[in-house]
Length: 640
Image (cartoon, rainbow, N blue to C red):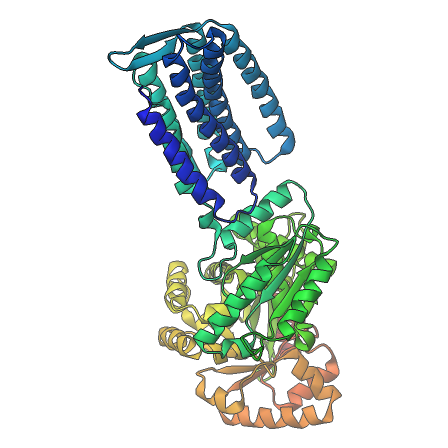
């Protein structure tokens, strides 16, 4: 009886079944679709073997039974092709309406195929001497026609919707199709070679090894579901509009980070086993030392969260003496985020921006935090659009020289034009640009516009000696900053004496080595530097002495404090004397009244900047302001 190959295929399916059922699964839709295909393939191979058995004994068995079993085997071939289509559509079509529409259409097609296969006649060939037997006739031909049509549909959708499917899944399904179709063609033209059942088992093996092995979703260290499983599962929940709650346990507190590696491993292992035992809860090991709990049962989520927190308070280890204090981030409503990526981003955002952790390490993410995140993502997209569409603008705020009694420079300040034409102030997007890494592009865009402005402007006509350009903390940590900025100045033919770069105190503290390398390179080229926002950072006067700057800028808050706080006045007086003693110039920012101007002038401040003279102006208005100020100054000189 020629069933050796089919038996090998059945053995493969038994082994796969053993491995598959011995591992925990996360109940993904693709897992369910794979399991359905697996069951149909298993039945198909079993009926293939059974049909061979009844055909070989057709002389002693009722003719109707032989034909029914043989045709049932053919029907399982049609169903196998259909469930291959079902598997791939499960991964492609996340829209329930679209998915149901396609499945209903093909279900009707398969139902018609099943009826036709059972209705059409079937014949049998058997050569007992050579050990050959097979079925043939209209029922067989209809089976192959329907199966090929369905598998062609799988191939077409696999190609047409390839961007919606991972490369690994495309490869696995592609191999499955090629093996199945090749075996079917061989069996069609050489009926005595029965390969379809074995080919089906090989296809299942490929799918299992590449995509559907539950072990691929398990973190090896903890036995919890891994980061990839979290993304797949939560995407499925979002696509199905299924509500859920999330608890992030972030094991990054000092008491945990200072543990020995073996103790840390013991705690994580014990905690993982405990968390895995929680009912109605899926537990995931995310990146680093972060564990994520998903509660599909939202009614019991809060009770479970409290239970977990109490368990951590009891301590770990055999004696319970190992205590850790994780950060707890709880989202009671999955609707606060739009998708899996936003959910993870929201968790990180809540941790980085919440002040409530200082007390109990626990925070429940609110609508307000989620709204802040959405606004931040909108700003991120706005920055991307602004860089792409040249919506970045540079405005200039004039700086007054108390010695020369005229405006001699200006600070370049970035603005972004919104889609509706309104302006976005830097306070709304600079910090976001620094966090997402776009500040380098944004900073270079501003510097290019300043250099273009200087190259196209006869600066001596406006008494402009230099333009101050801000450098962010991230830019100061960029090793190629000096090379890039020198290249831009050379591109526009701008004299480096017209450029004064402003660094902040926080930048000089956190990135001193790289910053100094950049500064020395640029100063050798001819650029000068200012220390911006003095009074708000972490540096002191001794540190300023080590920095190769020409100008120190007093922050607006420090200037205001001078007029509001007696102690601050003494501090600023002392700072002014010492800075001037270092032969450095001083700019006082935020001057808004005549009293402030006169006081700073009498204090010996070299430069004044603020709304008292002018707010930041767009390029054209700035030049008009500078020209008008120069003409008024010249008239005063003539009348004296």
